[in-house]
Length: 141
Image 1 (spheres, rainbow, N blue to C red):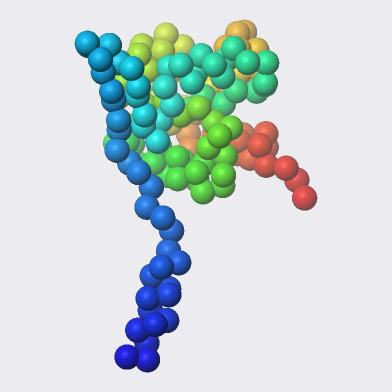
Image 2: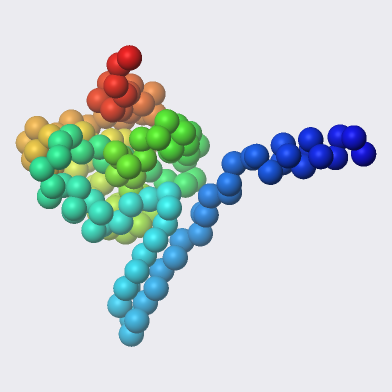
């Protein structure tokens, strides 16, 4: 009984569960709202490329890829999620985009300084992507 209160306290201090459900709202066959907390939408990608903030970090990922899941967990854990666009390779438009830019392995990241133009770099592998993100996002002490 004396361990009940500390146990309840420890359980109440745990992390809040993250919503993993994908939400798609359609009206008369047209997608009105699409939300997936793990991945960004086409509109979010377009907005990131259109804004004048550079560089843009665009990660091609998939839920079935262990390295991708590890990379996504690292990005979320370090608080970089707002800085990185993560695209789901299981979506048709993302597969088309990946094929167009020549991505054959995931995880892969396009680092673009000019809205997807000629100065873009392609980085592959979770370790290399993490290194590049750390160099660009993490502020030295």
